[in-house]
Image 1 (cartoon, helix red, strand yellow):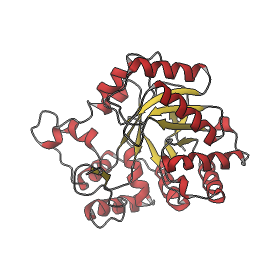
Image 2: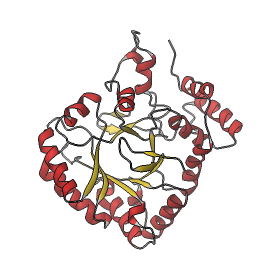
Image 3: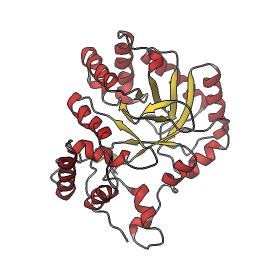
Length: 317
């Protein structure tokens, strides 16, 4: 497993993280087995949100960790707050109460990283800063970040904080490449030249913010954007998906060259970018996880990386 610093910190994290969104579907024995597979393969980073499984994802992980011989200090645990049933709530009271709930469910005294879960149009940076300071001073949270924020929102929030934000968790995959498309199509007049994120990719590299890729292996279909009419519209995994035969043809060709799975190649495509994007692997299937982890055995050439990008229907001007 490859390690790198999280953002501008000295916290060393695995380049492939375990995503806990689906842990709520596991019983205790299954969670214990999966956790051991993750740890044995070098994963030290675990990502949650207080809404995952209505809190059950954190609860079952906390129970499994408590009954294991794994040391809490050997893990980097992250969770997210602010997403509610009515919208978003970045108020100080909600942040503090949510963290207390997370810590109870995880049966731990602290979080290594806390993220704000998507942008809240009503956020007040000074209030968030006060919440962050209280959490850090109490020892409940070590570091902070955001999710799905553009550069302007990050700058706005950062202006009130006395510590740098380390993370922005965003959707990114071989079939969700807006952060790359607009840069390639700079000065063009086609739709791919539209910047939806405020230059997030170069901005994150310049400011040492780690981008975490969520849904890194999901295909959202031919429509540009997976969130349609209030619902996420995913069409299964990218690999072996009959809707995108050209992508799978090239994945298969490159996988055979490197002697790994197509899943590993789709993962390696993300990890190949010099921004050191951390992939959030949300699987609960040990074999699928093993296929993902094979990516660390692969260093794609520039030609292979572009071949995959073009196979996804993207163009070069």
